[in-house]
Structure formats: C-alpha cells, structure tokens
Image (cartoon, rainbow, N blue to C red; front, side):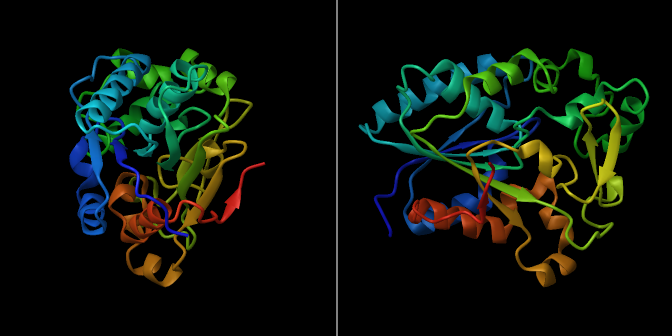
Length: 274
C-alpha cells in the first residue's frame, strides 16, 4: 500500500560525492519525492563519528528549513552506511531524536570492511592499492593516514560501537546486495570478478559471493531485510559491470527497487538475516 512520501536523505560512500546519486535523483524528482543530498566529501580527514555528527546536524537543519517534523528515509552507499548507523544507533540510540522510517543501504560493510583491512595487509596491501589506483583509491594512497579506513576495519572502535549498540526497532533496515551470479570476469575486472573476504582466522579467500569490494557475508545484519541482485541474470550477463560495488547507486534495476521501497514501505524484501 502506498503511503505518504517521506523526504529522503542521500549519504554517499568513501572517496565519493553527491553526484553518485544523479540517476536516482532523476527518478525521485519524477516521483515527486523530496530529497536532501548530504555531502561529506570535504571531510576527508575526519573520523566517522565526526561525519555522523555532521549528518545529524544536517538532518535537523533541513527539517527546520523545510518545516518538516515527520519521519525521513535514508539511502546510503557503502561506508555511508557506517556513518548513518553510527548516527542512529550510537549517537541517537537512546534519545531517538532522528525519526527514520527506513534505511536502504547499498553494499553495506556492516561487519567492518574487508577491503579496508586488505589495504593494511602487510602481504597483499601494496599490490591491491596499485591495482585499484585511479579507480577506487587515489594514486599514492596511504591507508595509515586515512582515519575513515582505519575506523571501518573489522574490530575497530567504530565498528564495535555500532555492533554493540544494535539496530533500532523503530526503523526498517533494507539491504541491497550484489553478487557475481554468473562468475563473469567483467563484473569487477580488477579482481577477475571475485571479491576478497577476511576469514575469522584472519586468512583471505576470494569468491564470487560479493560485489567486488564488499563480500556478501560482510553485509550481515541480524534482523535486517535484504535483496540480492541481479534478479535478471540475462541483463546481468550483458551488463555485469553495472552490478559492481562502485556502480550500485547508478544501477537501473536497483534504483527501481529503491523507488518501490520509498513508495510502498510495507514491501517485503527478498529475505531476512536471522
């Protein structure tokens, strides 16, 4: 059932910017859904908790300026999910001043980022950074100087705080995940279509169960609903690169699902994490 359209807050990911949402914004405008596009691209030297506080202030500011006091929806990509969850579950977990109907998270590293850990790996780190240079990381990138990367590694203070706070029962959690269903090497060519994943024993494996950057298991969040893309494998075979982590916010199949959740928030996800 269609309900009142809540304003949508857009939160981009690491080393990204608000332009990543351009295709989604076109659809939001077509549907008459208001949106507030939050930018933290200028906060490159800030820790995640600082960005989360900035986001909290931004939401209050936009609600005041627009004379709006109801619930909002939040759409976030990648590390942006950590920013959003820290704001809602750690900073606002007790007071619940930020009223949110649903979070729609694309490629979220809910258990901490294997890629962030991989950047720091003494054996593989240098090679991985070289491979991703100019595509996913800046040239001459040094992860040790990156506060965000250090704080989204598995077991970091920020990741542990989010985990210990737990999800909020007043919010619907929707996760949008992608995997390489046909094992196409074009999916994310840097890694021949595979995704690196850190095991509990601190060893590494590569598999097709991920979006090239975020492994499927890393997005696990107890109680959250999730959808795994692609749904249409024929379209995937012809356009597999569109489903990799970097392009999730611009993927037409995923955008269609996002709009469905925004217009009909009682839509049931494909499955739930238990």
